Amino acid sequence: MAIIVGISGCLLGQQVRFDGGHKRFKFADEELSDYFEFKPVCPEVGIGMTIPRPVIRLLDNSIDIRLVDSKDNTLDYTDKMNAFTDNVLPSLETLCGYIVCAKSPSCGMERVKLYLDNGHSVPGGSVGIYTKRLMQKMPWLPIEEDGRLCDPVLRENFVFRVYALNDLYESIKGEDGITRNKLMNFHARYKLALMANHPATYRKLGQLLAKSHQWSDINAFFVEYRQLLMDGLKHRSNCKTNTNVLLHIQGYFKRNLDKQQKAELRDVIMRYREGNLPLIAPLTLINHHLSLNPNEYLSKQAYLAPYPEALKLRYSL
Ligand code: SF4
Image (cartoon, rainbow, N blue to C red):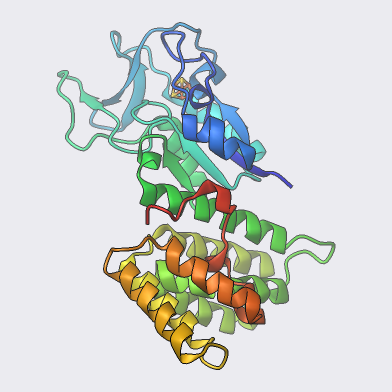
């Protein structure tokens, strides 16, 4: 099953911008499109605006933030945009992620220019009207901007979260619906990933699952679990947490590796910790040892193979 991901239409090369142009995002269009089924949306075209069209902007009118024509504040598109978003949301429920276009007053995710009545801009800006509502209605959804996805750490984290959410949805499929057993099995596979991304969430989710029998409504429990999981994975793993996880994994091989192999693995982990090797180096060695010394718990861990290797996302970490 394809992984369905929303995207601002202009990032896929659709000529839907105010000036009739596009903002094709090569990484999405050329690399991710081999793995994701993109669902392009242009909210401005969605509310009936023309191509080309007048420029719009965010205005803080001291009561709330409005989406208005940049030359005429009385031309207000906010209600139309909110109605469009609410209308399109049911068709977005199966999404596992969303890539939005930076700086757009409709699609931008952060630091979108926000103006005051006097023409001055507000430091820090705001969030595009469409994306803001999307984030409010689907707070678990991994959302990133094209610009931020040029950062290797943010890129890896986003793709990891998309695959994790898709994995969660796939794990609960079946005629019997969501069950505690399915969630326990899923969670067991994400223990090391959570230890690397956010140890506090690792502990919190463990406690939540231990008390899952106290929840009478499994669907409500699932919603809580999904939110905590996705919030936790949003934290980026770092050299320290990855090193802890790698050393933890090394412990599983203590009976399988000889003295020299153990020293070699430890040396590669330490060189990663010191910044002399990328994360992919110890992971490749670990996966090699795992193929020779199968371990049921480790081989299921999403941390070791979270997404297709061809994406090369861990080469720069
Ligand atoms: S940024 Fe959003 S609203 Fe603007 S052209 Fe792209 S998809 Fe359309």
